[in-house]
Image (cartoon, rainbow, N blue to C red):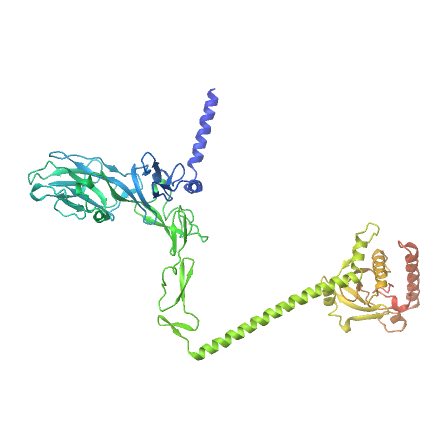
Length: 567
């Protein structure tokens, strides 16, 4: 039992190490995936990422929002600081919250008040958007830096005419009479107020007030002139603005650390929490995300291209605005050119030149298109003709015989007409090595270096096609050293062609007539040739798969190779 407990503890320890070593980026990606299905509104307040309602819907617990539905109209609260949330601005990196009104209704002396402590959170009271305000007769309101009230960082004093507070005056302005204001240092994390009385002016039994409030709230109170100062302060809460940033102490890094560059070239933001088309910007308390130039949206989610040309023309001098990703281009309309900050008409003679160039270019493009269409037409026509000739010359019959199990035919290579045209230099007259009743023979060289004889046959009649294919099949089956080997054929041209091995030393007729004097034509050679002819004819008749009768034995049909052996 003890071993089982130890094993369980060990597994738990390993899992804890594994989870703790997950990078912030990995954890962030998982949260962002879940955030897509999270609530985005509470009580009319839009909740934008990195803030979120519910588990795994915010960047972390500091940005978690609780939607309290116990009110008639639901109210959102920032869970980490327990203040009611009124507005979120991801562009300004601020939130507006309900800040408490501090009051002291003692008869005299100094009295402490509840505090707001933002220490160890990404929030701080905004020094630019808030003002510290005190209201009351003979009132000294002091703002301290910390919880212990040891260091005073600001404060102000207000007094009354005759020691009497004017309770009917609205809060549309604040002067030293009845009310005072002062700025606050930034960043200010603790809202802790203490009161003192000057004991000047008689009555000092009225309430003293102090509040951290948004600057514009005083001007907005003009919209409700019938609400008195005391009634407004009696609401207990006033709007205040908090700055926020991604806390570098929460393992999200900084712009110079985990995040490198504006984006990774694909619209993303590298290894930061910033969304696509957004970049990182350092702050004293951490960093924030900002949309790239020319883009707008939520920089923690997705920034989209902003159309600079949609709301008015930002271009000068009557230029045409064209929106581009992240910016815009300015250009002059046709017939105008940019010069000295404006678009000016192109001189008349230049317009004619440009028009002629345009017409010439258009004509060239038209001719190019027509030529392209002609080439396509000719190519398709050529393919149709090749298919037609292949069928007329028995190509389908040859394929059927080759694939048939009844014929033991060795592989016959089907050459294309272009291959043989190239091999014979387009059937050059200088490559003719023989003529006969069945066609003309050319010497050729294939692309693989083989030297071959290409026999260009005469046109076939319909009743000759089957016999021609039979000849090809029969020749492909013969394997004798004194019979010329067939390499293949071409059936896609108008005239069918046979491709043989090339025999270099001419015909027996040439030797008999003395046209080839390079090799001595002795009686021994003649006798040897006669024997080889007889043996070959015997093989064709007696030993071939089917008896073959040549029927055209003559000296012009007998070839001699380099060893004077007949073929």
